Amino acid sequence: MRFRQYTMLNKNPIIKGTIILTIASLLSRIIGFLYRIFLSNLIGAKGMGVFQLIFPVLVFCIALSCGGVQIAVSRFVAESKSRKECFLVLISSIIMSLSLSFITLGVLYFFAEPVSLFIIKNKSCTELLKYASFTIPLATFHACITGYYLGFKKTFVPAWSGVVEQIAKVISLFILWLVWVEKGISITPVIAVYSMVISELCGVIFCLIAIFGERFFAFKISEIFSVMKKMFSVSYVLTLNKIMLTFLQTLEAVIFPTVLLKSGLSLSDSLSIYGILTGMALPVVTFPSAINTSVSTMLLPTIAGANSGNDVSGIKKATEYSIWFSMITGIFCVGVFLFYGDFIGTNIFRQPLAGEYIMILAWLCPFLYLSITLGSILHGLGLTNAAFIHNVIGVVIRLASLWFGVPVFGVEGYLSGLLISNLVVTLLHSFYIHKYVDFNFSAIDNIVKPALWIAIGLIMGKLVSYIFSFADCKGLVFCIFSAGISGVIIVMVFGYFVWRESVNLKQYKNGV
Image (cartoon, rainbow, N blue to C red):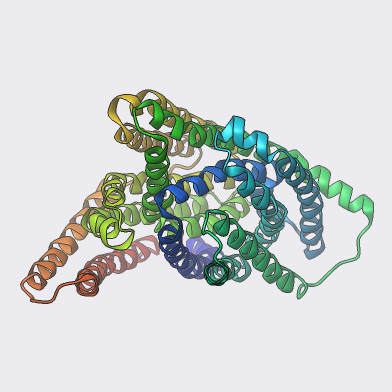
């Protein structure tokens, strides 16, 4: 009976919110995927490499401004006892984060050249960093609003603001391309930065329209300072953790092209490989993580609320279900990327090397997706430092593989380190959570059954592709049609498994 009450009160918002977030996130990533294809054709692999170089620095600057704010806001709103208290949390977070973000914007804008020369070690990034710095306060404000709504388990604004951003990014890139071609302006990576700034601005406008529809409360300055003090006691730990972790990730991205140069590649080839890996292959492999990210986003405030109410049974069941869902998603993606990796790289990105990387990175999926979910559970339980330490260990493993593996084994040495680091982080998260949540893990339900069903789906998809190979039709359109039919069959077979197992799981937990 208690579980049914928990399901009615808490799990329905998770399911509903996850569905909304997943649909919007998948739509956003599909649009973003098309954007990357269009952009890579405009500026080439080398241009993508230069464009990708600015992101570690930009992400680090955003972490300085609002590293732990979204998580802190979501937790405090979920634990608040009144609507006014939630409103005060929002106002406090905006004041704290925007103050830092404008300082960070100024520093990055005026010191863009030294950062490009001495950190990124590529002077062509100077102009890109200057314009990209304007996204920092926009991203910060967006994070505060997103955390506020997620704390209420309201997902419409967080979900669809991302879709608005991606649509604005594609449209603005297309318009800028038309204008630049008409005026004879050379197409460079700066066009991508312009479209990024415009898209962030559109996302903020969407959030402002939404927040002005909410009820506002009168407050005293003393109340704001009181809430800011309370938030700072939690958010500063999250922010410091985020800054340190982002710093290590920035270091990883900055030394990547340098290590490729030391392995014997030219500067042009190094930037091309960096662009193919980070701008094409990795986005494809992380594309399905939209589903797990949606689950994790809804899981954090739910776990936090259940934890504050000592609902041990609710935490256990939510943990078991989210682990099962992450595992089946990851195993499904391993099969799909092994099956379609070469097709995606060769026919969509027109870079066969991207296809090779996708097939290697396919084995990353179960551990990557599961680590996202487990990390969210740790944050929900208030075990932020543990999550931080585990992630640092993962980054250190990647840095070691980058520094020592790439000169000997090439890019494959780094990809192996990427797999090992995600495996280690997943295991560390799992063991630590098990100390606090006595969850059950069935290898049959979580590994064997999903692997069997995706194998069946892939065999059927391969059979369809084989039958189509006898047709006289050729060309890209026919290849996409054939691959699409195979993909539908694979998804239908595996979808049937997921539906059947989820029904069985629900009946089991309800004692049917």
